[in-house]
Image (cartoon, rainbow, N blue to C red; front, side):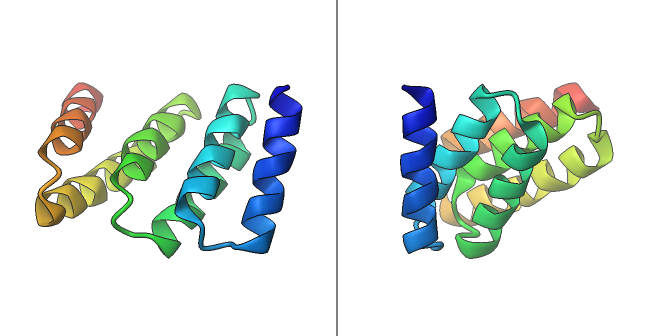
Length: 104
């Protein structure tokens, strides 16, 4: 079932590369499959096409941490703080700030 979902999401992204929801779903499917390099590639693409998609910064940062790329994670989290402050997304901002505080 997960494979069908991934293939469906790949098709959706291929048809409309700027579909933020489909790209986020695809990144999540890659994460669930353990393909963290592809996960971060999708999150980075999502941040590029939809810079206000706050969850991409939180989950992108977490993925970078799992890959052992702490400096990149800090950068992504910091960008997420800027975005969520500007957009008024206090909930996601607090999640990102907590992750950034733990990372140090």
